[in-house]
Image 1 (cartoon, rainbow, N blue to C red):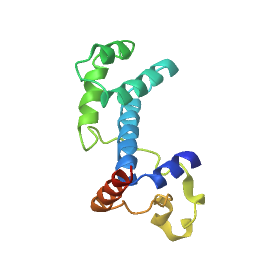
Image 2 (image 1 turned 90 degrees about the vertical axis):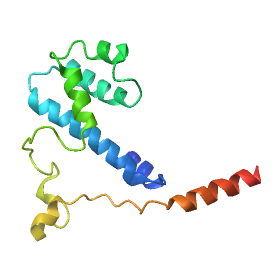
Image 3 (image 1 turned 30 degrees about the horizontal axis):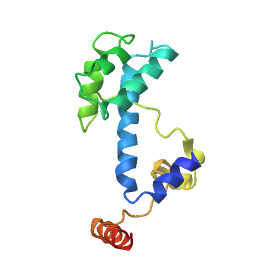
Amino acid sequence: MNVWLDGFKRDSHPSREVAVWEHIASVYEEYRALHPELTTEQHKQLFEIILMIDCTDANSEMLRAASANLPPRSLEYVLQSYGSEMPLHDIADDGNPQGPEIAGAEHGASAFWDKEHFPNDVPEHLIREIIATERKGD
């Protein structure tokens, strides 16, 4: 996990990347909650098709093949869920999986705040300046 967090911290726009992975996790968790009967292999297939969505056309044969062993209409549901900014269903969760032992638990609700601390995104104009400077130096 520390390697992932370090990678996000070095990203010029970490909040975008974190948001993408949070959305992937949300789609996965929502579908998993609706289909608790999935086998381990089906869980892997579900995760694969969610990752493939950004890399391929929604009508791709590759997506259809990857979802062949999932329950009927799974691909359609996952595509709809991935395309939505909000979850399609309101599914209760267990709260923060880290539990109240994280720092700040004595302050009530703060126990459930994210504990990762990412730097602010680097402003777009600064990134463009850095790239332009590096190109001039080549």
